[in-house]
Image (cartoon, rainbow, N blue to C red; front, side):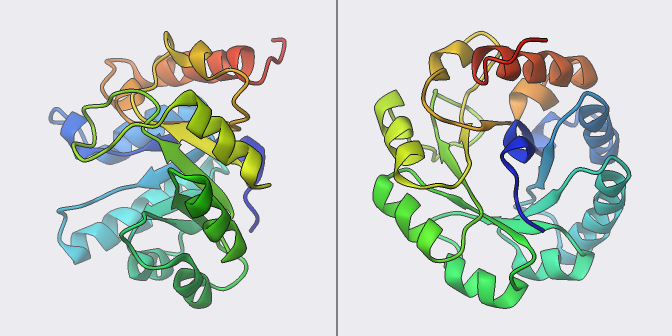
Length: 216
């Protein structure tokens, strides 16, 4: 399965911090109904068996909407649940090792802040890049920012689609126009909203208008 540029248009990354008594499954389904184009299941503290059960459930949900499911960091869970791919950070398993395990048909995303990291990921088997934080964010405490110029340099350095991430909202999105990104990865801009479906619809329309310059 190859990663298409359109898959990154509106990339939803899950976060249990915004559940507020609801099930993650329900929130993901709302996001899918609103038009998200890829889902990343990110679980840092869930026991492995619970993570697997959740991943299997959400994989079936994503399949119903024909949207790829990516697992954050955990290659074993991705393999066991039949996910479409894995996203790895700079401190995680090397992209070439992930590719050797997953094979050529799965999607591999890599977090890359610099041109050097981007080129390495591309040459060693990545299908797309996640680059940021492009704005300040409270979602990831250890996230360091990158400039618009750095983001554009990463986009220009490799032929891979790039999703910008970090503090992106409908309001600041126009500031990323012209950088070369294929879309945005968001957490709180979706899952912190009272109406996740509506938030997804509005963000998707904004990306098309402000980044891709497509007419409705």
